[in-house]
Amino acid sequence: MGRYSWPVAQRVTIAEIAEQAGVSVPTVSKVLNGRADVAEETRARVERLIREHGYRRRASGTPASPMIDLVFSQLGGEWAIELIRGVEEVARAEGVEVVLSECGGAWRPRQEWIESVLNRRPLGAILVFSDLDADQRAQLEARRIPFVVVDPVGDVGPDVPAIGSANWNGGRLATQHLTALGHTRIAVIGGPDDVLCSRQRVDGYTDALRSSGLTVDPALVRTGDFSVTGGHREALALLRLPDPPTAIFAASDLTALGVYQAARELTLEIPRDLSVVGYDDLPVAQHVGPTLTTVHQPLHHMAELATRLVLDLSRGATPTALRLDLAVSLQVRQSTTKHKG
Image (tube, rainbow, N blue to C red; front, side, top):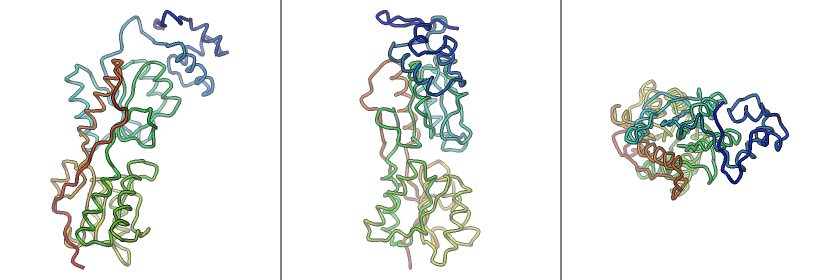
């Protein structure tokens, strides 16, 4: 076991922590090492004492490893690649390595990841589309391992460092573009209902319709999963309605690709028969035919800012803001046109 260092004014031993917490020394050791076999209430009590005494762990007197943990809910696709590039660009310039992990599609990393991080002791962690629960946050905070969330799944609160984008405005921009072209039957295919950015994009869509004097038709509001498969499934259902939409706002570019696939199957031509707007502005948006009108989300810049923020926090710097939502813009291409109805 490594050596444990406490501020001189409050130097205590693990035994004293155990006594104050009313647990055994081995239990405190398990908490210190991130072991999963500790009751949640017990872990919280020990973590509180660790924070109160200003605990810092130093393995054999060495500083934290010059690395950053980059965690995704699920790896794969151009969306993840853009973020990885942004993180690696800053990390390389700072002489820091990047360790990639994924949560297997879950919104939170498993306890095994927490234990691995506590053993590696990186400079910090960046979580993409993956949040921490209160217990996981406490474990990292007690070891002075800072973390930053990119595109939070839920409302993480003002005290959690997070980098996002103006999702509500993005949804509004996409929908306003379609209403300006004369479309009145405009559908939306969002992401999962429990994901914050999806709800915000759909809310922006709803606000734009109402601002244009249009009624929100519940039949045109669909829940997807940001995937090609989900976009294809929901687009087929929309386009087979008795009164189908003439335009679809897809809450991700991958969803939009699924819409393209559904349109081809139903022998509909984009944009003559159906206008489509995506979200993200991935490189593929310019490579499909017709090229995709989409909301540009600055993924690369978001990743750069998250990396600089977590490195600043690891050095004890106080950032000017813990939460940043970057501006988005509409990239008009060939997949949208005026409604001729």
